[in-house]
Amino acid sequence: MLPARAIALKPARYRALKLLGAAFMVLMLAALSIQAAKGEEPAAAPKPAMWKLEDEDSVIWLFGTAHNLSPAVRWRTATMDAALEEATIFYSEAPVVQADSEMTEPLIMKYGINRSNVPFTEKLSAQGKKDLKQVLASLGMKEEAISQFQPYRPWLISANIGALHGQKRGDMPDASVDKILWREAVEHGKMLGYFETLEQQFSVYGAMTPEEELKFFEDGLRQLIEAPNLMDEITADWQFGRIEALGDKMNSALEGQESLKDRMLAKRNHAWAEKIAELMAGSGKVFVAVGASHFAGSESVQSHLEELGFTVTRIQ
Image (cartoon, rainbow, N blue to C red):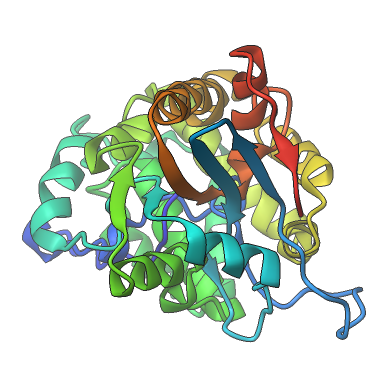
């Protein structure tokens, strides 16, 4: 969903919180923290998935992004660059690039604080406690570091751990595709549009029940331990346009978490398709850049657009 960095979690006072770039979904589910792929020929040309829909006075390009990645990863193409240059309007998920701590701290207070008065670690299963210690150790953190997480909800801790894991692997938020394209859009004077507010993005996870949240947290730990190469596989799928394979991995990662998947993908994709339909009813040329996971699977943005009667053509 969002570009991410590790959150400065300090239990003494919550005002120390910083969510740089409004980052909270870093786990390998949807954020697509991308690094150099393994198992691909280095010389192979990148071709991240891209679609186009148009009528007599409107053209909209849909480009799937990676929110965090290594600067070494090649992803630009002539097709994408030409579309971005031609567009006069640039749409992204939410105004995350402009977000600062003043904007995000109130949202963390609203959606990210553990108000149960019971430390989340006391609710973890025996395996979950073991996995947490193992993951923290892999990040070079001592077991005592768990204490600094206690005031926060598990989804927010998952985001922080995921961000730290990505940084260890070489992810750099400033190399985010979303951020790079947004800056170019601003530099070239394009109009800016957003599908969601920051609060809407936070609420996707803030709406989880305690049971859903603990499962989300423990499943994320298990994935970090059992599938250490998953990000390399997702990287290759994204970088080389294998959107169906990416969708399969998304479904597998969210197995047993149907409510979250519905909020994270299906409902948002439907709402975004409705907004794109509104844009098509007007006139102009719009470049849409959102996380690639929103273009994967049976509930994808383009699937909803086709249900609305639009012809969506894949051009890359």
